[in-house]
Structure formats: structure tokens, C-alpha cells
Length: 483
Image 1 (cartoon, rainbow, N blue to C red):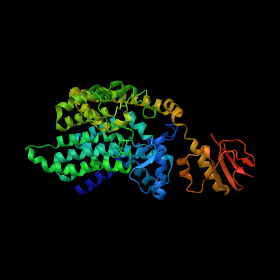
Image 2: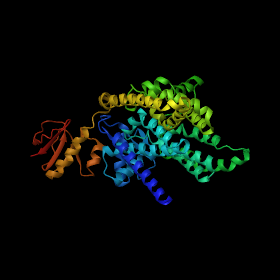
Image 3: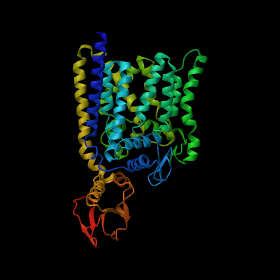
Image 4: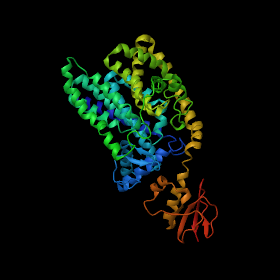
């Protein structure tokens, strides 16, 4: 009987988890190719190199499986975790712009499941659901889930780091300490901003796992350092092999205490957190904040309850409010995209707020919860309405229109159907879009030239001597067939 009941519970949990995963993917996939309307330069570089690596193992510079990929016309190094994650997806499935962006939705899904698991062992199932509710209604989660960038990549590794630290403190099992350390080390290479975060988290980890007497810490300090520090200590050598890959254009410096504190304090500017958001339009609507405004009262209550609850709750607070300290050395002001690793901790602190609210309201808490839930949804759907439509139009001026890539899709379809050799005018060439549909059979030509007979040309000219316009009804280009 007990075995049968256990199987039934496993089936129910699996079914609910699967249903949640499907619904979450469908929800975040809505208008995935319409918002933002175009593709950012970083998406373009990550996507193009992912296609090349998935097919040949070489990046755009001819390097074979490099740790860092130099993209954006040689101006920016791409982080290995995200670059190879997308490359693996492209290897397993057909490369596409949809898959490039869907890769971030998968990270959101993985992060949600990990955060639920952590929250469940801390608070129980009901409160864990509230943690995920706060996490998924964070505006920046939706914004970054719609772009194939590395900004969102630190989140799952941050959750694994803190989950295993918590489990180690509860069980004293060394395996949790090792996994936590490795996850922290890997996070150093998920996103450039984590170069300033991982050192802070390393110090906080040592403080959290401290035990009395002092000598008892030597073993677990050694283990944690052994599995985490090599990731950081090898970075000068990697920077030698890939110059500029570690800090890019940023050069950490300390001018004076005021210039150091301003970027740090700006990370907790209420107007930035809840009203204005990131300075860059494609990382924020500039109309809604980093977090939902509706979550502010719960977060404040969560701070109060976290201070009074236990060691772990206070540790979460310390993480949240100390993580951006070193951003003062690189003058990072109002850049929410660099603070995405804080979202899981914010969600957990809010859960402590919900717990306190339950204690205060007692028999009326269900009605208060219903009211809070409605306020959250009103706030979130106001964000979604603006994001899906008004914001989408704003992004076109910055990142263009993804309908541009449909021209290359039509070129591929027509060239295959009509058995013609595909050509592209050099002035409209787009490496990533081309790499999706063509391996190495695409040819280039100057706009004023005509390709040889048996060719089909993608161009922005309506009429070319010796060619016939196919009238393919493309928004930006024309398809011309040689006579």
C-alpha cells in the first residue's frame, strides 16, 4: 500500500512539474520573435559563432573550440558558458533565431525548478510556490528570456551555489560543499559582471560555513577553496591567451570613496529598482523597474523577518546587499542586466515577507493574500501590455526588425525550389542570418554587378539589368533571377 501510494505521489509530482514546464515555456515564448523587434549585436555574435562551432568546431576567427570567442567584429569576447550552451543546442537541433532566444527560456525554466527545490526545503511547498511567483513576475526575467544573451546565465549557478551551501550546513556532507564551490567557480565565466561578484560570494561562503572552534574550519575552507579558486586564479593566464577576455574594456580602479560608493548605492535606488529600470532600452522598458513595484511592501516585510528569523535568512540579506560592492570599481550605474543574479535572493527574501504577513494577519491572511495576488497581477499585466506592444515598437529604432532575416529564408527556399545558385549583395550581407540557412554554398556580389545565369540574387534594388524580379513580397529586399 505504501509503495503504491509512493508511486502515485511520484507520478503526481512528475505530471505537475511537466505541466508547469510546458505552460511556462508557452507563456514566455509568446511574441518571442516580435519583442524585441530586432536582434541585438551580442545576440548576433553569439548566434553566428554558435552555428559555426556546432557545424565545424571553429569560430568566426578560425579558432578550433576556443575557450573565449571574439565576436562583434573583434570588439568583444563572448563568455564560454553561454557560447557553448547555445552551440550545443544548435548541434542537437536546427539553428534558428527562435532557438537562440528560446535558450534563455530554458534557463528560466531550469532556474525556476532549482529555486522551487531550494525554497521547498526551506519553507515548504506552499511558500515555495510564492517564491516562484515572485521570481517569474520579475519584469527583467521576461525581458531577458526574450533575448539570446548571457545576462540570465548566472542565475541557475547562483541557485546551485546557495542551495548546496544550505544543504552542507544542514548535513555536513562534503559533496554539497564541493558542488557549491564548483558552481561558484563556473559562474565566474557565465557573464562578465560576475568577475566582480564571485570574489564577494567566495568570502561570504567562508563566513557562512564558519564553525567553532577556528581550527575546525581548515578542512572545509581548504575543500571549498580547492574547488572554487582555480577558476579565478587561472584567469590571468586566460587573459594572456585571450587578451581582454576577462575584464573586456573595464579596468577596475579606485578614485575616491564617493565614486566607489555611488555605483554600489545606485544598485538599490528605489526608482531604478521599481520604476525606471536599466539605462539601456533593450534591458528595460525604462517605464517599469527591475522588480515589480507591487513586490516592494512584501520585500520590506521580508527584510524585517529575515533579520529576525535564522542564520540562513540573514545570510540571504547579506548576499543581496553586498553583491554589487565591487561594481563601484567599474562605474556600473543603474545596470539591472548586471544584477540579475540577485533575483533568486530577492524572491526568497520576499517569501520571508509572506511568512511574516501570515503571522500578522492570522485568520484574515487568505483575504490579504488574495488582495496582494490581484495587485501583483494588475502590476504585471500592465508591464506585459506595455512590453508586448509599446516597448516592442521602441526597440525597432535600436535593434531593427527581425523580418530582415525572412529575406534569407526566402532566398534559401526559392534557390532550392528553382535549383538556382544563391547570391547576396555584399551591402546587405548578414552573417548570422545567412549561416542559419546556408552552409558554404552562398556567394556574394557587389550591388552594381549581376550574377551569372542560373542564379538568384537577394538585393535591395528593385531593378537590375539582365535579371527578373521575383516579386517575393519581402519587406526589405528583392529576389532577382538571372535571365
